[in-house]
Amino acid sequence: MSEVRVRFAPSPTGFLHIGGARTALFNWVYARHANGKFILRIEDTDERRSEKRYVDEILDSMKWLGMDWDEGPFYQSQRKDIYLEFANKLLEEGRAYRAAERRNKGISISVGTDSETESDKGEAIIFSVPEEDVVFNDLIRGEIRINSRQFGDIVLIKSDGMPAYNFACVVDDALMGITHILRGDDHISNTPKQVLLYRALGFDVPEFAHFPLILGKDGGRLSKRTGATAVSEYRRMGYLADAIVNYLMLLGWSPGQNREIFSIEEAIDLFDIKDVNKTAAVFDMDKLNWVNSEYIKSKSDRELLDLILPFLKERGLDVDEAYAIKVISLFKSRATTLVDFVDWADYFWSDDFSFDREAVDMHLSVDKSELFVRLIGVFERVHPWDTPIIEKEFRALVDEMGIKARELIHPVRVAVSGKRIGPGLFDLLCVLGRDRVIDRLKKQVSRWKEMSDG
Ligand code: GLU
Image 1 (tube, rainbow, N blue to C red):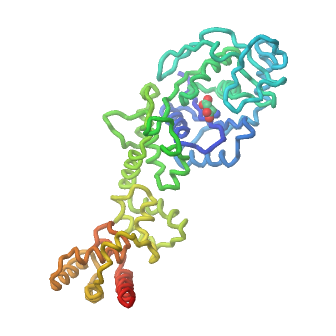
Image 2: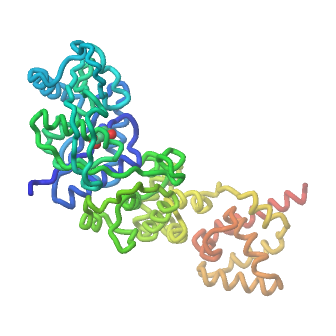
Image 3: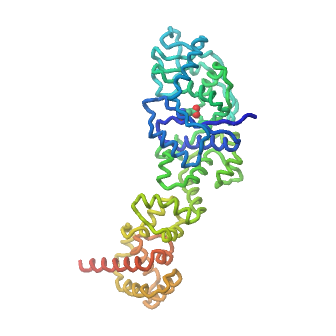
């Protein structure tokens, strides 16, 4: 069998979204599985809607996800002459005509995408579609048959000189030697048109596979509300690249045996187009969160530190690495995203942390200055400052005062962290360090004083 060559061909009219990323990933994984080539082509023929910043963002997101390409990126906007040459060939052969020459033949013209509206004007070159049943095989769905009456003649070159999507796509896929076209099933209606163009141009027709849609949890099309956010947005929200890749793979494929967490190497090893589900995948944020938390747990504290540092830096937080690693180990088992390490642990990163209103109302409304002052005295003497010793001394004080441990545990937690929940209190105190702990307890004593002084 000849070398497998697949491609990802985004239009840079928006950011790389979850659906596009899955298409790219399935192509990339298939290329790696088959020891083939993965080609990147930027379909930027819609000059009004294509933007450089989208190209940059798409390439950036692909690199972040680890999808390297073997050839490209090729830009269709730089290949206009090539498309024109093939369109002229079809004109000469009498298989295409200029829009202006179109006599009242009652021909409907298939434009391709919504934005390709320039096609009806004089200079456009249009392909005459013979009436026939176009049949092609889909590697996921099997045989698909569509009568050409359903779409009519096909625009090749628009009046502005730019190729229409279907034409540029076929010329490029053929010239780039693409053997398998793997894309979303929103393109199924384009495939019969493309098959006709391959044949007219004398090219071999490649294999096709159309992936089922990704739906939102509400059963509708994926939207911003249901999770169609750009890949770069997930990155900013603190998702890990390998977790996103794992989750994207699950949107239509799985390695079997109900396994949901797997490495990309395993996916490459096991992936086959025919195993992609025929039914739509549902984008489930809870599931993604679970996958992300599993990846967080599987990282070493050191690896997590490298991933979290940019988030801390972004907020202007400069931290000691040894200290940060201890904080990370406290939150690792409960964090869903990297941002959780920053937000939930804000009191570790800065003295200027947020106090949760409810926590304050519940646990700091009663003045416990006397207890706090005694505790400060105990903490000043604890040696060494270590979790079991802190706990032992803390409990000794509680016994001595004849109170229940929770009467002191909760107020102390809120006073030093601003929150009701978090890691075990004694671990928290240990990592936070004696000075910070005592300082915060003292601050709370002053606040109570201010309150009673009115
Ligand atoms: N530029 C098209 C898109 O982004 C490519 C479709 C295809 O893969 O043929 O939808």
